[in-house]
Length: 278
Image (tube, rainbow, N blue to C red; front, side, top):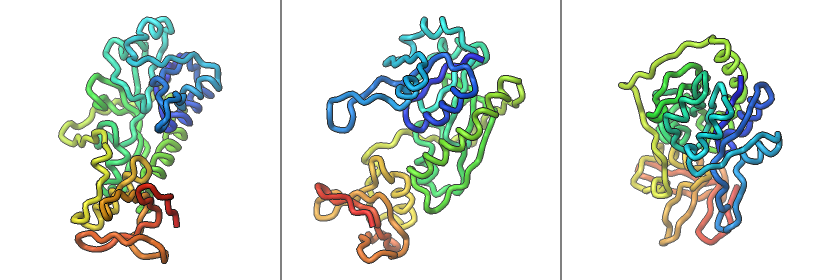
């Protein structure tokens, strides 16, 4: 089975590496390199580095439709995507003989969209998982063929959950693709009445209003734990809150009062100051 992989961030790397070790990967498609942080130097994408490590042909188009002819020449059996970050037109989805599959970070049809892991934390969910699904033009709406579930702990943040979800997909992908190759799967249509969307979040969404209930604020801090980081305003200055506890456990923790109680920040950073991690 000849496979083309399409993905960009660190989340995809261990999953793709597992596929490379067990199947015939003929190309990797990544987003183009972008400037890192505040500098102007281009930073290679994690999947670009993976392609270079294994000497696999790499494509980095602004739009995947720009490399339609090159993909057609590969005559692949499967297109497998994971956190690719681009719209894929129907003509590209139609290229692989066996279809196009996507690895999605939620239990579909819950949390279709760009930020499923963050929304599972924002909503205080106790369970999430990985779905392997057929790709369609409508985002994350295709038939699901494989699912793996994962409990969400109260101590989980977007950082820990990203790592756990990536590992979960890595542990399952070889078996899933082997089953797919052998036709050992069932296509389950998503129930449209149960769809929950998880659109892309921005910095404004990370603002912590002190009028919020304590539990809502706690979940927001978990969801925005590293990027961009939830924040409050103290004396007209932004304070990023990376981790907070519901109870005062450390002497120098920063107390933040909300509508029905306080949270105690144990990892925070005042604007223009060094990060404090207790």
